[in-house]
Image (cartoon, rainbow, N blue to C red; front, side, top):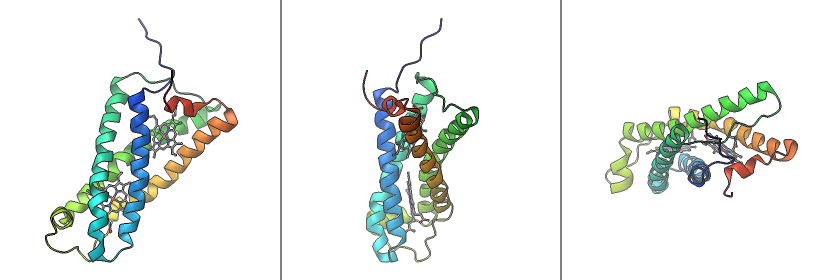
Length: 171
Ligand code: HEM
Ligand code: HEM
């Protein structure tokens, strides 16, 4: 017996998509602000950046579980086999960076011994803090997110298939 696919993403899925997107944008802002500050001022920003990043990771874990274990709408077509393939690859890459960004952030913070400095005020911030792989992933994520937003706008306003409604609440 086959079950028909739902017409839209579940309300929990929608909530997680938009909350994760919001957190990721807030994290870009906080991360970039911290990089521009002198070492002694970084801790106050990282006190927010680090736990929010871990929250984003937790949300992504729930989302991955939903993707594996709950039904989701059929893929829509962009009207072209190549673009449909690109869409799949971009969604996969978005999942990958949304996991790797917080994981590399965690690795970075442990490598420099930041948790006691940031949360307990023990010791001082390193003067040679280098975002390394975490910064590289940030740079990679920007074109991916831009492509994703452009694709959503293309569907909404050029193909007029009301794709955004699937990632929103409703019947
Ligand atoms: C969705 C999650 C995250 C995003 C989008 C994000 C984004 C960023 C960005 C854009 C930067 C600046 C990079 C650069 O200019 O090269 C940064 C720096 C940094 N992030 Fe994250 N981050 C995330 C999670 C985390 C987590 C979970 C931690 C640690 C627990 C963390 C720790 C750091 C640290 C220590 C820096 C360096 C700050 C500095 O050099 O002053 N990040 N992050
Ligand atoms: C303003 C920003 C954003 C817009 C307008 C947007 C829009 C959308 C829309 C309309 C869909 C539904 C596509 C469909 O029905 O097939 C979707 C799905 C998706 N979005 Fe976004 N999105 C945004 C930000 C993000 C960000 C920052 C991420 C990074 C994690 C992301 C990752 C995904 C993924 C992976 C999917 C596929 C469904 C899933 O597996 O959850 N989106 N997005």
